[in-house]
Image (cartoon, rainbow, N blue to C red):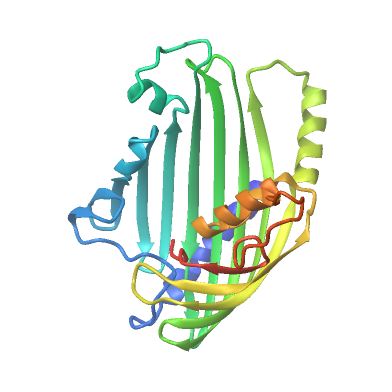
Length: 282
């Protein structure tokens, strides 16, 4: 049932891309593809083969967050993106401080973020479906012991263009933990019960609405309001959202940061449900 739904959804998205294409003057929420050859951005370097790009963010490597990104433009309005990261938490202490390597304490964090994002333009109306799989794996130095999870998230945004690069929008977002992997041996019956309860407890849904201004092909400013409508106890509420600004909001939410007198400190547009984001492109 689930596989059939995924196949049908992808087929409908591909069909929509063939039928509808965006006005060439409309600024989209997808970063446009680079010209063929080597390209350099503020924090990334890569090579474009036309519709396919391979790149990395070398500044992250200096922190022990080794990464590579694969990107394919199925059309100018439809992109497939997959990013893989290997994080060594002790890289800085080993590489820069010269501390001895302790194999028994070494852990690695491997995670992948893969998504499909589309922009469909019908006159002045924009439909933006987005689907993502987030996989995280934590293991010892040779991954003989490990634990990990796969999370499915996505959103559907509907906007109305007020100009070629300004829109008002409403967005529905949802997420759920699909599976867990572990090196520990657990009986099949116990595992099925655990997975069923996990999916029930992690399901969340949120809505947001606001205004977006794309001031160039690579950046945008978004101001709006967000609220969680289901899954207030879901642990995935702490990873909701898809941009750098969302991650900052989630960190402060998780910390429940408060001052010396115990009162929660409210930072406008960060700890409140009203938000301001400068990272709106995918």
